[in-house]
Amino acid sequence: MKKLVLVSLIFVLVSIMGQAQAALVAERYVYEIDGVEYEGYVAYNSRLERSLGTVMIIHDWDGPNDYEKARAEQLAALGYTAFAIDVYGRDRQPTSMQENQQRAGEMYQDREEFRRRLLAAYAEVANIPRGTDNVVVIGYCFGGAAVLELARAGASLRGFVSFHGGLGLPEGQTYDDVEGPILILHGSADPVNGSRMSDLATLLDQLNAADVTHNAHVYGGARHSFTVPWSGDYDLAADRASWQELQRFLEKTL
Image 1 (cartoon, helix red, strand yellow):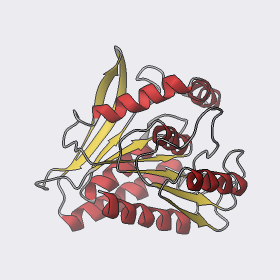
Image 2: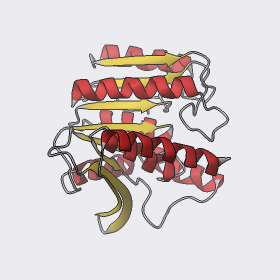
Image 3: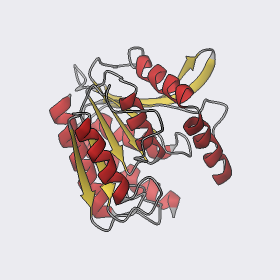
C-alpha cells in the first residue's frame, strides 16, 4: 500500500510540474555540523530566474525519507527552494519503531543539542543551491515540535509552520524570543499526549502572552498524522486544506 501511495504522489507531482513547465532539480545534500555528516535533500525549479524563497523542512521522528523528499519537490514545483534537513546524522538514521523513539528522545532530552543542530541546518541554507535569505521552516509531527523549538531559540526566520506537531512547552523555555509568525495546522481528534486540543489551547495562551503573531487552523475529526498518506490517520480533506493554508502563508511571508 505504501508503495502504491508513493507512486500516486509521484504521478500527481509529475503532472503538476508538467503543467508548470518546470525543470525541477532535486538532489541529496550532505553537510557537516562539527565534523559530523548530515544528509539533507534540496529541490528547486531551475527555469526560474529567482527563487520565491526557501522552505526548510524538518522530518518526522523516523528521519528524512521519501515523504520529505516529495514535499520538497512539491514546493520546488511552486517556485520555492526546498531544503529537507537531517536532525539525526547521516549514519544514525532509525530503522525501527524503537530507534524512532530513541532518536527523537535524544533530542527531547538534550534541548541544547537539539537547537544546535536545527540552527546549524538553518545556517546551511546560505550554502545550498538556490538558497535565499528569506526562509520559512515547516515540520511534521516530531518536525512540527522541532519548528516550535527553533522558534523559541530566536532563529531569524520569516515564519514557522507546524503540521500536527508536539505543542508542549519544555521546562525553562518561553516564546519571548520568537522573531516570526507561527502557524499551527492541527487535527481536533489528535490523541497524542502533548498534541491534544487542550495542549493547543495552552500554546495559544502562551503565544498571546508573549505577543507572538500567530494563527491556528483546526481540522475537525482529523487525528495525528493526517497529512501522511500511508498512515491510518490520513485525512485527505485535512491534508489538502492544510497544504493550501501553507501556500497562503508562504505567499504572505516570503
